Length: 157
Image 1 (tube, rainbow, N blue to C red):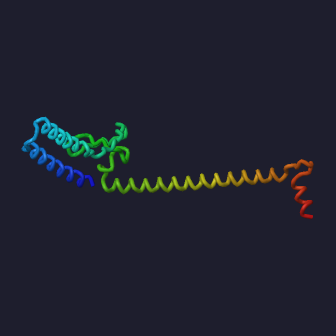
Image 2 (cartoon, rainbow, N blue to C red; image 1 turned 120 degrees about the vertical axis):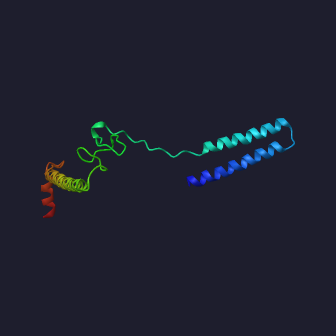
C-alpha cells in the first residue's frame, strides 16, 4: 500500500502544479492571486510530509566478545553474532553447520528432559503436600471435643 500512496501523492502534486500555473494566468486581484498560489503551494509542500518513511528497526549492538572475528569480502571485521565459539552462521562451513545443528538439537532434548523431570518432581511434591494435608485434616477435633474421624465412624454405623 505504501507504493500506491506515494503514486497518488505524486499525481496530486502534478495536479496542484497545474492549478498553480492556471491561477497565475487568471486575471484577478494581485493580492488574492498571491494568497491562492501560496496556499496551494503550501498544501503541495505539506503533502510530502504526509508520506511517512519506513520504520527502521532499532537493532541492539552486539557486544565485542560475542561478535564474529572473521573478515568479510570487503576485508572488514564481520561483527555478526557468533553461532559457535569464533564464527557467525555465515562463516561456518557446511560440516560446522551440521555439527552445530546436532548440538542445538541435543541441547533442546536435554532441556526438554530436564523440564519433564522438574515437572514430575513438582507434581510429586504437590501430591505429597495434598496427602499430608488430607491426613492432618482428618484428625482435626470438632467443637464437641470428639475427633472428626470418630464422627465419621459413628455416622457410618
